[in-house]
Length: 234
Image (cartoon, rainbow, N blue to C red; front, side, top):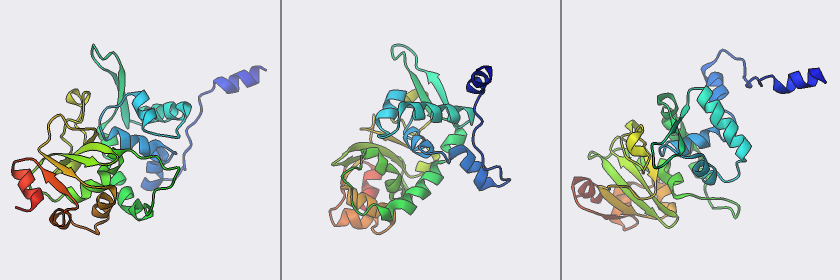
């Protein structure tokens, strides 16, 4: 009995590949199931635990709590208390955690051909399409916040240097590190575009350019200013 109690209270050792290799070390940190998807959510800015759980369909509360704890211990995320009247805690990425953006973008590009059709069991959130769309917007000269309207909902991204961050993506983001995209409408949008998921994915795969999509009417652009003019090809 004492031996069993001692074993139950001993802290579990995190699994490691035990290889002196950068790839193996990376997977020691982010190779567990759900970790990179949590990063995907936190790239949209600070999130409450309940919001993370709602936007990660299929993850159990125990697994989510465990992954967040591992991410804190690994220096990928931190937790902080919002000032009154919010009286809630949020999780956010550290600089090292935000450095995973190109990794997620590369995975999204690599995995895009697998999105041939939506399965009946597939969940969907509008902001999950931010990463594919960032590729199409990355070459824009004028920087600004682009609000994106899909049938599935709204999100917003920063055009013209999105990988560097620098946008306010919601009520919590104003006091936190910059996010590269955000769920829902923007507090202030420099441009607005409307398109469907298939066009968004085609843009992300490089099968269609933004100029082509705007010209043939598959992307509708609204607003005023230099960013809008560039999106319209003017």
